[in-house]
Length: 73
Image (cartoon, rainbow, N blue to C red; front, side, top):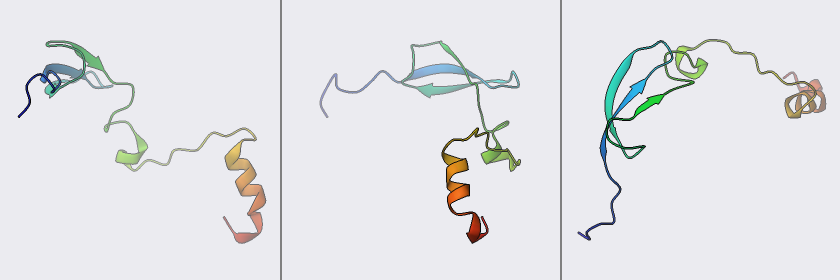
């Protein structure tokens, strides 16, 4: 294996949106740094199964819905 080509792999602390902390190994930051998450599996609708409305004010989603309105979307 070649030397000095791999990133530094170290322990960091991750702070979830609800305030819980856990330690994991990562190449992000440096040893002992703390990463604060804006979105995590405890709050994101993709993991919680919540029904999040897509906010779109006349953008791509609205254009798509108008274009294909007759198909029952």
